[in-house]
Image 1 (cartoon, each protein chain N blue to C red):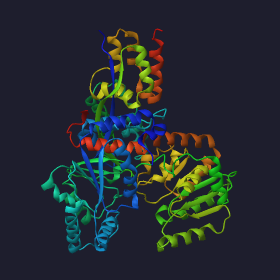
Image 2 (image 1 turned 180 degrees about the vertical axis):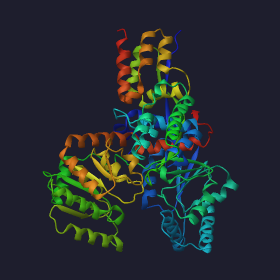
Image 3 (image 1 turned 90 degrees about the vertical axis):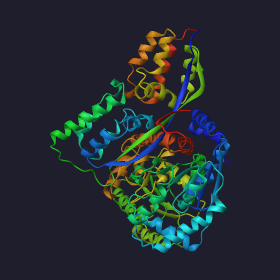
Length: 215
Length: 406
């Protein structure tokens, strides 16, 4: 007997850490010390809040370094971190530290401050995960639910499950694999969800899945 | 009165569905809101709108108001100014009186609730009662305090740190504290008179009443007549624009007629306008929400050129109406606008004039900014998001971890 796919959703409460940075050295120190949830928040905030922007602005670190400190090259290096490659927040944090440390060495600790009022504020999030009433027993039902379930649910199964909960793979691909849809599972796994809007991602998932539905 | 299900048409079915899922997890818990005024002011306005919706979701929520005399409110007004960075002197006797009034309120106001949700500094010292009654306590700060005066902050901090958590409206208001701090931005109500859809006839009739020509470009700033909203700077920017591009300028807002400074600002604004027939200075009476809505909808560009701002919800109002907005990067405005994606952030009169010209000459780009802005507000600044944050905040009091399975 096959197992159904239960759709969950996740909702975030944003926390302020009372810590700020006005230059790259302070940003580096913060990235080193804040919790994993804070690193996760700052690398996924744009994705969650700006569903419509394409291309997406990059992570908060890159955005701030470019727009508030005016360091375009460092900003580009931070922006080009390929989040989809990482399987854990730990690895992602190390990558940002490596870039910031290397920049600090090159600059011999010379630091440009941002304008007053444009400081980087470290934040974090507490994530609430709860089941929705939706359950799919087959691919047809799966497609129907994808059309109506909240964008938070799709976000949870694609992003949160893989990187933050360290499940290695997105939840959809894991289930599709279990019900014998190996090719579709691989197709979805190969998507780079970081380079499209969430609604764009929903459309792609529906397209791919409905292609495999047998009438 | 709107019902929570009415919001599905503007915020999405799934958004309202999620609110019901969360509210169910709060069954059996009671929440008491306490502030210092039942009418007028931003806090009362929010509570009046939110409480019926929370009850509609099945949350057991109450609202009570502390009592104080003139002396008490003069002291809390000083607190308010000091949190805004104004130099004020507050005597030890005044601090003692403030605490005494809070203590006197305890027996009349405190109910047997699971969660006490205390708004702003006026009732902050009620927390002293926590030692006796226990339960969960949260302090909600609605005030902008980017630059608070040290003495007042230190005094309030001794109380704030007795709460389970503190809630602020923008990241810049956060301070190093020993308790959890939560970011909850304010919101707009898409079904209120100020934001609901309006028929074109209604928009036309408001413009006709004020003799504004809808055939020509309209640039508008909605705000009370206050130097911090920089209405003079707005007129200066308009004059720079007018050298090259035709447009009309609307400055509309209310203000108390017994506020001497407001009247002085209005005089200065009129002087700066120099009887230009294309500048419309509209001093609107209270309850002009439909007129404000119509003026925003009739505009080609909306400005918010404030020098300082709390959150600046007029920006969210204009973006919700898909208007391209040019605003100063102050207070909560950068949370609402990502520069060149969902609006324009400027820092000067010249910069504001430059972007007004750009957007009037490039209406396609201006439309895209407005469309992006509307989506951003829909996802992040509607009352449904505000309710969701409050529900999460209440639930978070019973959990310790960062990832919580409900």
